[in-house]
Image (cartoon, rainbow, N blue to C red):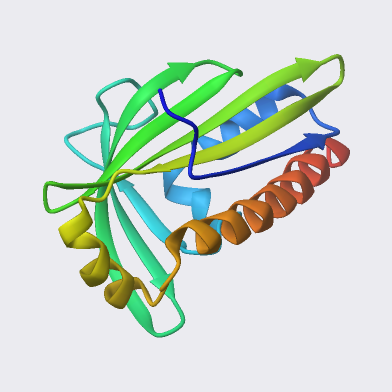
Length: 158
Protein backbone atom coordinates (compact mmCIF):
# COMPACT_ATOMS: atom_id res chain seq x y z
CA UNK A 1 0.00 0.00 0.00
CA UNK A 2 1.31 3.48 -0.82
CA UNK A 3 2.15 5.94 1.94
CA UNK A 4 -0.80 7.76 3.52
CA UNK A 5 -1.63 11.26 2.32
CA UNK A 6 -1.88 12.38 5.95
CA UNK A 7 -0.92 10.69 9.21
CA UNK A 8 -0.02 11.47 12.81
CA UNK A 9 0.49 9.58 16.05
CA UNK A 10 0.30 10.20 19.75
CA UNK A 11 0.86 8.37 23.02
CA UNK A 12 -2.25 7.91 25.14
CA UNK A 13 -2.19 7.02 28.83
CA UNK A 14 -5.04 4.54 28.53
CA UNK A 15 -5.35 0.87 27.63
CA UNK A 16 -5.50 -0.04 23.95
CA UNK A 17 -8.98 -1.52 24.54
CA UNK A 18 -10.29 1.88 25.65
CA UNK A 19 -8.94 3.63 22.56
CA UNK A 20 -10.18 0.87 20.26
CA UNK A 21 -13.67 1.13 21.77
CA UNK A 22 -13.73 4.87 21.10
CA UNK A 23 -12.62 4.71 17.46
CA UNK A 24 -14.95 1.84 16.56
CA UNK A 25 -18.02 3.44 18.16
CA UNK A 26 -19.32 4.91 14.92
CA UNK A 27 -22.51 6.44 16.41
CA UNK A 28 -20.37 8.38 18.91
CA UNK A 29 -17.15 8.92 16.93
CA UNK A 30 -18.16 12.53 16.36
CA UNK A 31 -17.17 13.26 19.97
CA UNK A 32 -13.50 13.15 18.94
CA UNK A 33 -13.50 14.11 15.24
CA UNK A 34 -13.75 17.63 13.79
CA UNK A 35 -15.66 16.91 10.54
CA UNK A 36 -17.57 13.71 11.31
CA UNK A 37 -20.92 14.88 12.67
CA UNK A 38 -22.84 11.61 12.96
CA UNK A 39 -22.58 7.96 12.03
CA UNK A 40 -25.22 5.27 11.74
CA UNK A 41 -24.62 1.58 11.14
CA UNK A 42 -26.38 0.21 8.05
CA UNK A 43 -27.79 -3.15 6.97
CA UNK A 44 -28.39 -4.35 10.54
CA UNK A 45 -24.78 -3.89 11.67
CA UNK A 46 -24.36 -2.90 15.33
CA UNK A 47 -20.57 -2.90 15.66
CA UNK A 48 -17.35 -2.85 13.67
CA UNK A 49 -16.83 -5.97 11.55
CA UNK A 50 -15.17 -6.38 8.18
CA UNK A 51 -17.78 -5.57 5.54
CA UNK A 52 -20.06 -3.65 7.91
CA UNK A 53 -21.26 -0.37 6.44
CA UNK A 54 -22.22 2.94 7.99
CA UNK A 55 -23.67 6.24 6.84
CA UNK A 56 -21.56 9.22 7.78
CA UNK A 57 -22.79 12.78 8.07
CA UNK A 58 -19.96 15.30 7.86
CA UNK A 59 -19.70 19.03 8.38
CA UNK A 60 -17.29 21.91 8.03
CA UNK A 61 -18.80 25.22 9.07
CA UNK A 62 -22.11 25.55 7.27
CA UNK A 63 -21.21 22.91 4.66
CA UNK A 64 -22.67 19.41 5.09
CA UNK A 65 -22.13 16.19 3.12
CA UNK A 66 -22.89 12.50 3.49
CA UNK A 67 -20.71 9.48 2.78
CA UNK A 68 -20.80 5.73 3.20
CA UNK A 69 -18.08 3.87 5.07
CA UNK A 70 -17.25 0.19 4.68
CA UNK A 71 -15.13 -1.46 7.37
CA UNK A 72 -12.03 -3.05 5.81
CA UNK A 73 -9.97 -4.10 8.85
CA UNK A 74 -10.81 -5.06 12.41
CA UNK A 75 -8.17 -6.38 14.79
CA UNK A 76 -9.48 -5.94 18.32
CA UNK A 77 -7.49 -3.39 20.33
CA UNK A 78 -4.96 -3.08 17.47
CA UNK A 79 -6.44 -1.84 14.20
CA UNK A 80 -9.60 -0.39 12.70
CA UNK A 81 -9.91 0.76 9.09
CA UNK A 82 -12.64 1.73 6.69
CA UNK A 83 -13.08 2.95 3.12
CA UNK A 84 -15.28 5.94 2.39
CA UNK A 85 -17.25 6.61 -0.76
CA UNK A 86 -19.69 9.24 -1.96
CA UNK A 87 -22.51 7.63 -3.94
CA UNK A 88 -20.18 4.88 -5.11
CA UNK A 89 -17.23 7.18 -5.89
CA UNK A 90 -14.15 6.25 -3.82
CA UNK A 91 -13.12 9.04 -1.46
CA UNK A 92 -10.63 7.79 1.13
CA UNK A 93 -9.36 5.07 3.41
CA UNK A 94 -9.04 5.82 7.14
CA UNK A 95 -7.04 3.66 9.54
CA UNK A 96 -6.30 3.64 13.26
CA UNK A 97 -3.33 1.56 14.40
CA UNK A 98 -3.01 1.02 18.16
CA UNK A 99 0.10 -0.42 19.79
CA UNK A 100 -0.14 -1.32 23.47
CA UNK A 101 2.87 -0.21 25.49
CA UNK A 102 2.05 -1.53 28.94
CA UNK A 103 -0.63 0.59 30.58
CA UNK A 104 -0.51 3.10 27.72
CA UNK A 105 -0.65 2.89 23.96
CA UNK A 106 0.61 4.56 20.83
CA UNK A 107 -2.10 5.50 18.33
CA UNK A 108 -1.57 6.38 14.68
CA UNK A 109 -4.37 7.72 12.51
CA UNK A 110 -3.80 7.71 8.75
CA UNK A 111 -5.76 8.48 5.62
CA UNK A 112 -5.27 7.80 1.94
CA UNK A 113 -6.97 10.00 -0.65
CA UNK A 114 -8.74 7.73 -3.15
CA UNK A 115 -10.70 10.40 -5.03
CA UNK A 116 -10.49 10.19 -8.83
CA UNK A 117 -8.81 13.30 -10.32
CA UNK A 118 -12.01 14.43 -12.04
CA UNK A 119 -13.89 14.35 -8.71
CA UNK A 120 -11.37 16.41 -6.68
CA UNK A 121 -12.63 19.90 -7.70
CA UNK A 122 -16.24 18.97 -6.89
CA UNK A 123 -15.28 17.43 -3.55
CA UNK A 124 -13.18 20.46 -2.63
CA UNK A 125 -16.13 22.79 -3.26
CA UNK A 126 -18.58 20.52 -1.40
CA UNK A 127 -16.32 20.25 1.67
CA UNK A 128 -14.83 23.74 1.59
CA UNK A 129 -11.29 22.33 1.63
CA UNK A 130 -9.13 23.53 -1.26
CA UNK A 131 -6.24 21.41 0.06
CA UNK A 132 -7.73 18.18 1.40
CA UNK A 133 -4.34 16.72 2.37
CA UNK A 134 -3.54 19.68 4.62
CA UNK A 135 -7.08 19.75 6.01
CA UNK A 136 -6.88 16.03 6.83
CA UNK A 137 -3.49 16.49 8.49
CA UNK A 138 -4.91 19.19 10.80
CA UNK A 139 -8.09 17.16 11.41
CA UNK A 140 -6.04 14.09 12.35
CA UNK A 141 -3.97 16.10 14.82
CA UNK A 142 -7.14 17.48 16.39
CA UNK A 143 -8.80 14.05 16.45
CA UNK A 144 -5.79 12.53 18.21
CA UNK A 145 -5.78 15.33 20.84
CA UNK A 146 -9.49 14.81 21.51
CA UNK A 147 -9.15 11.00 21.45
CA UNK A 148 -6.31 11.25 23.98
CA UNK A 149 -8.41 13.45 26.25
CA UNK A 150 -11.49 11.20 25.99
CA UNK A 151 -9.53 7.97 26.58
CA UNK A 152 -7.50 9.35 29.47
CA UNK A 153 -10.58 10.87 31.11
CA UNK A 154 -12.42 7.57 30.69
CA UNK A 155 -9.57 5.73 32.40
CA UNK A 156 -9.47 8.26 35.28
CA UNK A 157 -13.22 7.93 35.81
CA UNK A 158 -12.91 4.21 36.61
